[in-house]
Length: 358
Image (tube, rainbow, N blue to C red; front, side, top):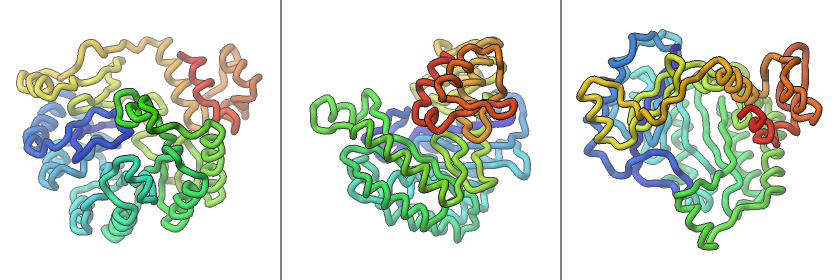
């Protein structure tokens, strides 16, 4: 176990599609929250981490001093992957240079689109130019491992608009791309707008065509499609996320953070004052109702389901697994040597594959 996730649940505003656990306009909490993160880390065994991931929320809202304090509280190997998610809004060259000096060596930039109209629809508070400038400044600052996040199948998006986003990716050539189909989550602004008939999803056929366009374009550009929603140049797979897909244990700290530790999956308390109360008492702020014991049977199921997300390597073939053999017969999985992985068809019907292991 050598992976640490740090949840920073603060944002300047709530995006229209987002259902993540976040707090808006709570700058006054940043310093105190940072102190509690550091205290929570101390509640776990001393571990020399190989991957650290600042996620959110918007971790880049924290001051450089706060990020430095958290970094100084963690033991990690010299070659560890240390990722920070950031919003391109108001991210200066100087800020990026300071982040690099602090030891952050990988950035995940929440670009989402290079189309200002789509960004406005999504409720993002930055422009396409903000994202491009931040990316270029990150390179100037010495970052050589940068991921760009994109969303497709947004309301009223056309194939031409998607192709324009892909052309910009071809121009910028980031090391890593995470590209997700929009999910309409209950409780979000988008969900409400759809319920009121003010927004609608694009057709399933167009969404499938878009995904096919993404795969074709990026693989033709030399990117490895190594996970369903992830593409990278050779050698730039996300170390941290790969641990999730390999069903490795990890520790998550912060309000609402999830963990898989000592054979249990669980989440921290979401209400921030409850989180603070537990930290003050010197106990891990776990929401006991979320604790799930992972026995050997469940571990095998999870390993298969998560492992099949890895398109590049899949999982070891078990000839006695009826579900696997059924999926092979449906041409959703393919057997190569002693491993099975998703077929091209299986990538598009991945949810039909994963349900076999639930």
